[in-house]
Length: 135
Image 1 (cartoon, rainbow, N blue to C red):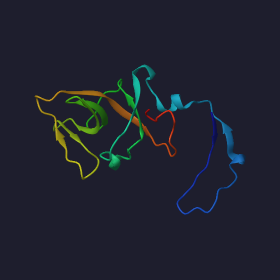
Image 2 (cartoon, one colour):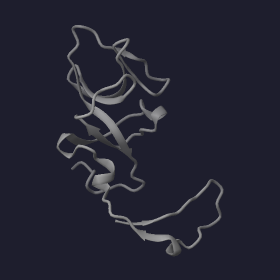
Image 3 (spheres, rainbow, N blue to C red):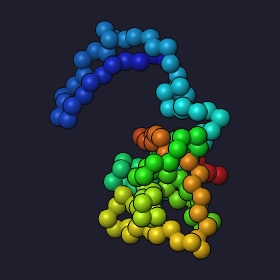
Image 4 (cartoon, rainbow, N blue to C red):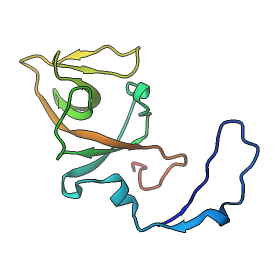
């Protein structure tokens, strides 16, 4: 993968020529984003409940089933038949949103609940990808 180092701050008026900093790095996006390939799946976020942690509608989620779930991890779970992306509060057994307009959801004994994996990365596409468009 070819990487051009560009450092930009708010209020910039232009870019220095990146050609002088051009370098070849021996890595791929797969290696950078995925730690456990056989235990990883990709999903897409829908809604605004996770904006407080930087996950927006349409973002790509890299979800790892291999890593252990820690308190306050962002997870993808099956909650009563629906896939959700939330913060898990293991101590109080609840799912938390990262948006004040959404309430927390308790995980009760009669609920069907399983953690599908931990969100280890999220990716924002600034142009729509034809791969992600649903027919």
